[in-house]
Length: 194
Image (cartoon, rainbow, N blue to C red; front, side, top):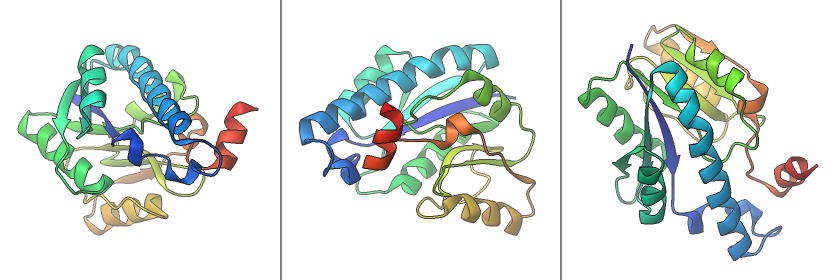
């Protein structure tokens, strides 16, 4: 099955706003770009091991240039959209190009492990949800790429499972420690630095 691994990346100046009390704007921008670069570097070998293609969905020109340099395709993020809208565009892009599966990985994981990615990409369910520590959705694997409507936001892990169940699709909740921890708040930042 042809798999597309996709990383959504919004403009760094609009990212990590919950860290404003802990980091200055320039420091926040550097952190966002560092995490993004590390994610791209991490996913290259993972994709190679699984025969997957790579893409970034973004409207940011610097993020797009970094993606192309790392060998990722770039999916243009629609203007004035949220994460769910950006990933809907990525799902359509993947379907149009004949991909069977879409794997979504955030750009801000603290320390992802290849073994956890292997477990995720080995799932045979139509919808596999890797929850974040706050019950959001950190990683998501869909077959086909537009299997469900994206429902990102608070408690989205449960909403994605409910969406799959309402469509009669096989759905799995797959808690994977290294894919559950992203850096969104000052508490997350403190934990990552420990």
